[in-house]
Amino acid sequence: MTDENTHFGFQSVPLGEKQGKVNEVFRSVASRYDLMNDLMSAGLHRIWKDALVNALRPPRNRAFRDLDVAGGTGDIAFRILEAGGPQTHVTVLDINGEMLKVGQERAGHLYEGRIDFVEANAEELPFESKTFDAYTIAFGIRNVPRIDVALREANRVLKPGGRFLCLEFSKVDVPVLDKIYDAYSFNVIPRLGGMVTGDAESYQYLVESIRRFPTPTAFARMIEEAGFRRVTHRTMTAGVIAIHSGWKI
Image 1 (cartoon, rainbow, N blue to C red):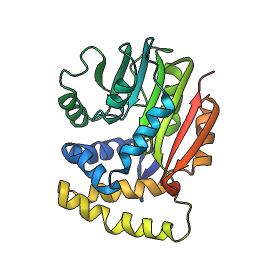
Image 2 (tube, one colour):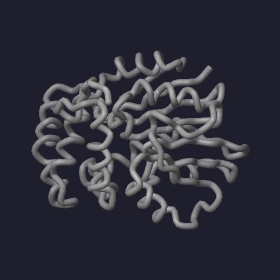
Image 3 (cartoon, helix red, strand yellow):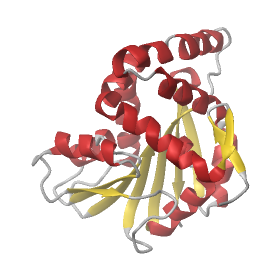
Image 4 (tube, one colour):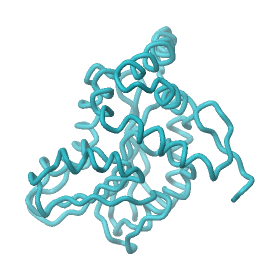
């Protein structure tokens, strides 16, 4: 066990303890996670996720393999499968089995042979190098204890020419709106989480984790340091979220 510390929301915790704490957060809220996303964002998360898939542009006329990390409930995977052709395949990977159960139940037999669900750690992907055409992750990277390790793993499993796409909360960049957003985040979301899921503390953590995540520019540097090239990002909804892109050249 390392003596190194990291953050869990606004708390400082031993690095080796963070993953267990994050697991408990998502285990607690798994069954109502998607409902809470709708309520918290007033449905905007659907537009943001559609924007991620539009940026990916999965082909309709050839084989295409995407690895969707931290995608347990299937929201991104289902969108990719609908946008791509019959040879599009998505592997949904999540460290939390409860989240994966939700995704498997939602998928049913709808995408038979085109989707699989894998319980594993983003820091230790159980795949050979150069396996996937794309790696997607939505609202998950900030929960990884060692983000730099996860980014290097993303680069490793991508084929040359493969693309990394990350949808994550960012920094509101409009004066006054940033204060309103903070007030809503810290005063409304945990209470709403308590009413809907019975777990206000988990949503307190999720709000705090957004504030601890690097700025878009700083995160772009991390993506480059992991070996990606042509790294870009664009913000949406006054900076509430950002879509980060990088290519394995």
